[in-house]
Amino acid sequence: MDELVLGGHRFNSRLVVGTGKYKDFPTMKAALEASGAQMVTVAVRRLDLQAKGEASLLHWIPKDMVLLPNTAGCYTADEAVRTCRLARELQLGGENPLVKLEVLSDPKTLLPDVEETVKAARQLVAEGFRVLPYTNDDPVAAKKLEDAGCAAVMPLGAPIGSGLGLRNPYSLQMILDQAKVPVIVDAGVGTASDCALCMELGVSGLLVNTAIAGAKDPVGMASAIKLATEAGRLAYLAGRIPKKLYGSASSPLAGVIGAA
Amino acid sequence: MRATVNGEPVELPEGFTVAALLQHLGVRGDRVAVERNGEVVKKARHGEQRLAPGDVLEIVTFVGGG
Image 1 (tube, each protein chain N blue to C red):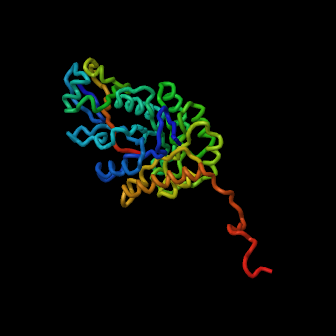
Image 2 (cartoon, chains in turn blue, brown):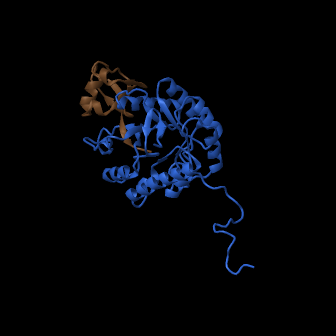
Image 3 (cartoon, rainbow over the protein chains, first blue to last red):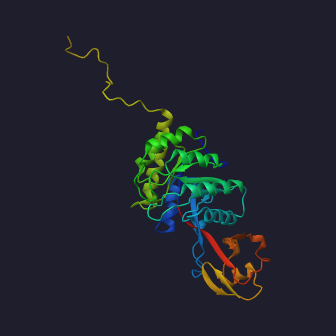
């Protein structure tokens, strides 16, 4: 069985999906199910005290899915650490809870502030969290986060929600070569082929939200991304042929009719 | 006494506990997490943790996100 072992959990699916940006909860639920994902991200936000009896997100997330609370929207290590502690409390203080650590630097690019991310990661690891950090496609940053005790590293393919796909496969290759923890591409995926490409390079998994939630047919895109993730993984395991500049015939060169 | 709840100034009775505040707001304690002045107040302590003038409270829940 080709399992992904991540933060103390074993997953058959290598796809982690987000729960943001859906037009309604029924569509989200159908897309989550179609994706085959076994872990979903959720955000921590102030309760809307005016909206009494508002539908609960958790009601629409299949019960067997692992929750991965994020620190989206945090711009300092302190905010991110406080958010993780609240997320742990929301989950009734489970042992070694998983968190997706995200500390941003700027609202326009949504690129990570690696310095604050590393600082938060050290604190959270010390408090017993299993930390999955969103980071740049920078091997140096990835190594620092791994050394800080993170359970995985999650470099971006491109800015969050941009749909630009994997912009720097060579940096990702360097991160993969050195990493001793799972590498998950988090952010930037635009469509199914982006997923296949990342998986073919050997990443352990993918985190996708906008590409599914923002598609014309989110449920259809969730299926496409599921299949592409599986196809890319199978191709990686099967081992691709080396690239060559010139052609190499597939049929025998000898015995062609009319030869001298 | 004055306190701040989710960024909004509120006037609360003296000696209010976290549990009383949640009830006052019509919020079920098992659905939310509460932070008081930057520290989480665990659910088991909602009934005993009293609020003080000037407290800054955050009441949060899970929402959709990526």
